[in-house]
Length: 411
Image 1 (cartoon, rainbow, N blue to C red):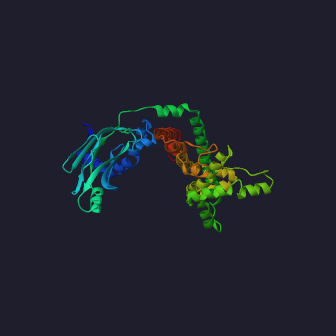
Image 2: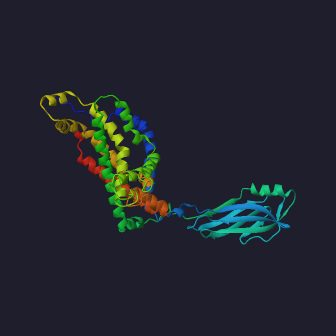
Image 3: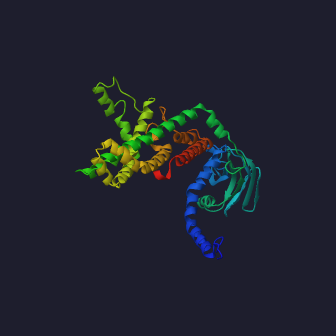
């Protein structure tokens, strides 16, 4: 009997389905590329560029024209500027058509020529920050107000080209070299790891404990669940201001209570001294984000079959044994997902720390360092380099995490 071998390759129908699938996915892929990939590539590009905040100001020929009456003789004033503080402007100039009734009688600036009512000026190369005014005597025929308005409404054509630091062929690794050579980076990295690890684990542990408390039905359970969600749904600026006020060393209720109880001899600056400030911002992270873990863990616990708990009760298992041998294996999947998400989000967290301490008192993380390098120090390239390091750390962590966690645990 002859054995029939299956056809090789894809048939016409399979190829048509594949084209249809890619056609349906194309809008999604395009949106993801525009929203995620393109900004990410831009950050990588800026990180290898010697770009400062002032370099983002474009080098261009800016021209402002006005007709002013200075004494007996009206004057046509041209103000030419190069707003860039770092880049030269090549081939700068302009062409302006004068309105009817305005005639130039004074000497033209060097490089300018008048042909009828059209004046053309070529200034060559303008230095960074160039700012010059040219005044030319003029004669006005007719209404001076109408002539002034006509000059303001004119549309001169300006010329000029400059080398853009973001698009030229200059690349450097100086941003990364300075970043890793400074001892400050490793202290900031250590603060980031401490804040991320303990903030993530704390949110998971507190969320797990809260879910175990509310896993049973009792009167007022819905109200208590709503109160548990308050830290997560409240505006971050409101809760951060509340914490700052509560722990204020001069007027805070926490300090007053500690002094009255005899716990401390004087006021404690919770958000202004090392290492207490780092501990406080980590506790704030745990308090603010444990409700997310609480919701997911509680939903998973309520989906676990209760029959095995009844069987464990009949076998005389203690509450700890039921949790360790029955509940925890069922929760490993959701705990793994929550740990991954919370680790990434906490590692990227900026607003909480910035509102509480501004990155002072030993609480500066990598994300705060991105802001300080880019805007406080005005070094956009160095800020982008720190952002690339943050991306690399999260990429390494995610790869390691997925390699260590098995599919049976939910990933």
